[in-house]
Length: 382
Image (cartoon, rainbow, N blue to C red; front, side, top):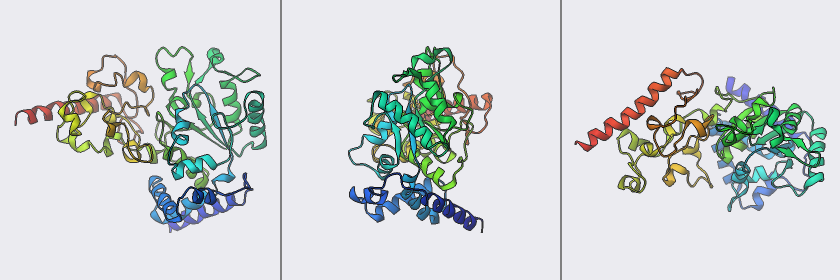
């Protein structure tokens, strides 16, 4: 009964959105997908996978498909702050566009500096116009850390010389939903690494409104589009962890679903890059993999049309979806137990990323390091 009520509620939500005027009249998302050689069968398979990702019952797949088809009714404003544009590139630069990237390309991006034709004064005017025209209705996505306070001048934009901090505040104040895309926007990123000369801050420190963090350097396209679909379906925030990350995407450690996990359990470790263990696909913990301490779904979703991810390619996870990873996870080619830096690795490394004490975390790190040492010793003396 509860599942039926939820299905009915989501159906009503989609019906309400479908009654909104289309922001692009020339064609629909269905047309776009068909033109790019995606069959209806493939589209429904994609919808089924997104349903599973969002932890919904399989019977909800048709609702996910409908949500994708009406996503062009909601305007999106995408701001670039202090960043490398890698998060946008992860969606845009693909030789064989996935359904995720096709939807992202087609949703009504009222402002996106990377792909819009306008520049200079016209671009600045377009942003102001989009905020005013769709006030209280648009989805705001922000990419990049934001120099703040007395250092806000480090990010000065446009002919009027407005700071990124001012633009982000104005856009956030009038948004229906706010997503911090990538680790820089979620947690400050590399720009916020010690000594943080520009006082780069996460988006959540710039606005008092709720911000959903979608970290990663970059995050997968499914994590970006999945959050849009969740908002279309529910109109509310998803279940979040202590760092405001959606649990459906960041509820498990990289380590939990890693294809090399069996090697870890067996005590089979790469000792140095290029050795025989590396050729055999052994666990990368001893050469710095931070998968046991990092919450993300990279090991399941991967990148580049689901073909690969760093660990599969032979380099350990660097923990890029965790707060302050540049300071707390380095050196990236050494295990946590061997860190040279006297930094305190913060909250989040328990099974749910909800609450954790430093003592528990320390024991976790010691336990993983001890396992790596003991099992390797046993294997050596067999």
